[in-house]
Each structure stands twice: as C-alpha cells, then as structure tokens.
Image (cartoon, rainbow, N blue to C red; front, side, top):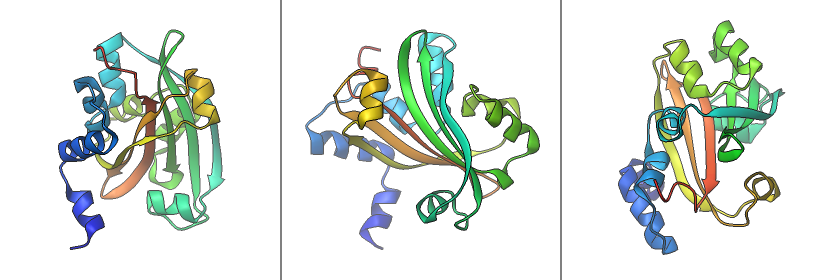
Length: 187
C-alpha cells in the first residue's frame, strides 16, 4: 500500500491532529466539526447562527481542463458548472466555497437551482432528497490569496477542506471550503 493510499484512509481526527501538530496549532471543536463533517456545512452554520445566506461571486459554465476533469472524474472538455460563493450571516462572511459540477450528472431541476444561484448546495441536495455521501479528500492550512484577503479583510492563514459529493457511485460535485483560522474559535 502506498503512502498516499495510507493518508487517504487515515481517520479524519488523525488528519486534524497531524495538521495541528505540524503547524503548532490547536483547533476549536467547532473548527474540527466544520473541517471533518460528512454532512452539510450549511446545516451546521444554520444551527450556530440561525439561517445563513449565500452570495454568488461567480458562476459560469466551462469545459473542464485536465485538472478540473480529474477532480470530478470526467473527461477533459466535459461541460461543468463552476460556482464561487460566500456563505454569510448579515454582513459577516463565514465560509468561502468553490465547486465544480459536471452538468450531465444533475437533473434539470437541480441544474436550474444551481443556475438560479444563492442557494447553498446542502439545501439543494436536501430539497430534492438526493441520496449522497461526502468524501473528504484534503484538510489543510493555506495562505490567503488576494481574493480571500479582500473577502475576509484579513491576512491570516486559512483553514481549508476539499471533498466530493458522491451520488450513484459517481462524483456529483467537487467542493473546496475555506475560512480564516481565527473563525469559529469561540463557539
């Protein structure tokens, strides 16, 4: 078994512990829950803050390049929906997320809701009773790019996770969620 395979099979709490140790950090329980949940982040944020809102920063259709095709397990050139959103409560940004969704794997109704924008993916899945599971691929700390610094008004490091939503044994969506390392520490 290769090192990458061992890492992929490592329990999420071990991945969190390793990340804390490697970076000399201590994450709050809420941060750990947000990074490791295989459920809806939207549902967790709704519990913590009351119903949150979503603002779509960018959404468009594009032909998947090699990198993005690999993320969603399709051929390069396949039409995908690129979506970039900010989950927020009032004026406070909470979580930045990007997603890549192969359109041919979504029903017309799901595609229509994605295009309408401003509906969190967790709510779309729930609204249509889509049976799915989330597989967390990566949990890490990253330096903020210019967009994240502007959106969150900070230079601090970001906690990030990447995962896929699986439906009928196929990747329905690839998602990356990011928030500043100082967020969700008091809850």
